[in-house]
Image (cartoon, rainbow, N blue to C red; front, side, top):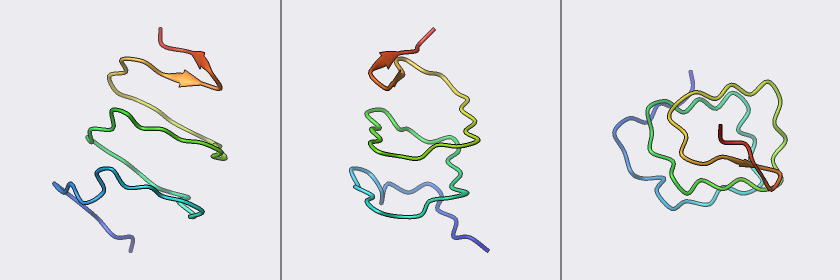
Length: 62
């Protein structure tokens, strides 16, 4: 069973590098300022309130 983290700020400001995060699920979390570089995305589902989203240097915010 995967680890579950709830009501925690232990990852605030963390850098994750060269890790396998397949199957990662993030729910009801504050991720403002989130940056991803060099990720391989496949079968991605995003939902929530987006202020600004930039994909490959293109602002895709509706």
